[in-house]
View 1: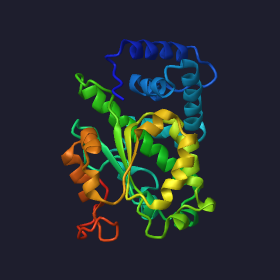
View 2: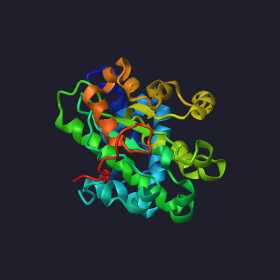
View 3: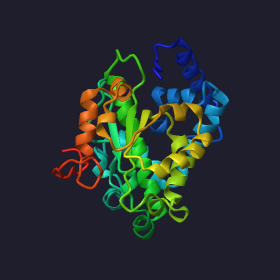
View 4: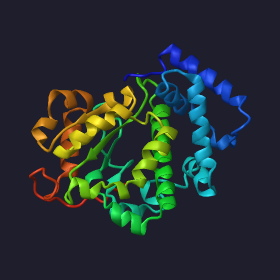
Length: 290
């Protein structure tokens, strides 16, 4: 997935998409909220160069951002420097209480110096989220998270003029489920992730080059065989599923993608007595930029 602005076809497609957006009259945004060339490239690639479909999705993305004043100001707050790290996101503390994660500031990078995000998906307390985090607050938080990720990638792209590929995150999702897989992910408590997959994700496409699932319980595999049929082939191709054997994590496939040092740092980052990695508990990571 080495998409690059060295590809003339991508450069032309982004230029054409920008011209199409200039003539867009239905969903307008302020100049400070306009999509960057990198963001437009992500839409182009996500829709396999079908610019009409990319236009529709950009329209949906703008509608999402314009659907409330709180959503609308997220992009400009981040671009203006009012938000300098994940700890500044609205509702960060309460969301992280029930879902330990860091979409932006782990401090881990791949061998190509791309940022790594880590989420303890299996440990999320969705019942606690339901009782204490209104859906609207979760949505506002996630929009800030994905806007900030985009902002980070845009800065990497601007600073690394010789970059031979588009900057993207590598997303690590730990699926260790101490409460049990079915108790964690029941039909009654997945409204947060349903919105994430169905609305938020399409509005912020192609932010990651790889999605690596680790500590995957055996029950997951049966559901995955069904779920992957709902996903685009390009998305499925990004996903690598690993168990809890950290020796296997250091296999040739993963090492070639992100590098040995990166894998070691991910193992250290996730290491806790109760996560199945058989390592001593280390000082808790606060998931914040120091």
